Length: 158
Image (tube, rainbow, N blue to C red; front, side, top):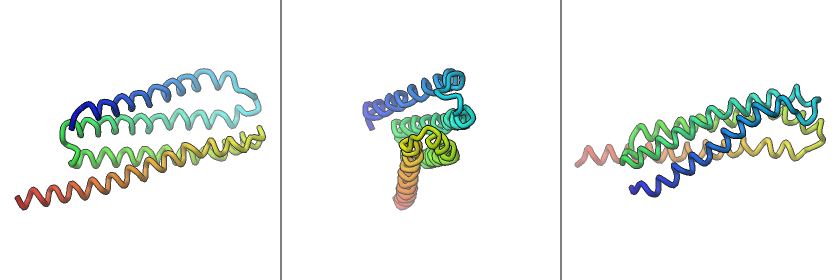
């Protein structure tokens, strides 16, 4: 496969990581010292901690995606290491979804206190986006496992 098509995806991975890093640095340094309403500080800190912790599996998934693109460039896309990369991406997405499910009660309390029911819908976006990525990675993992199995079977018959 030509490296031009994967180069675009590698650049997209870097471009996805930069805003998250900037947001984590900005949120961790500024928001705890300047909450919009001091009454929210007890509910705000757990949300900030989970947002910051969820960056770890996010960057791990980005790294595994970058590795997967490197495997594609090296013509190792139909191998066990590619399957393991997809498995890691799936677990990272499930972890992110679980972390955001954990903070939903805090988001509910903040939305109740501020009378902003739309905040709950906004808080559910990362949950469903992560679940969609996890399901997509699981489907790709299953397809790749079958392709690797058929490839190994085909290599044995030749």
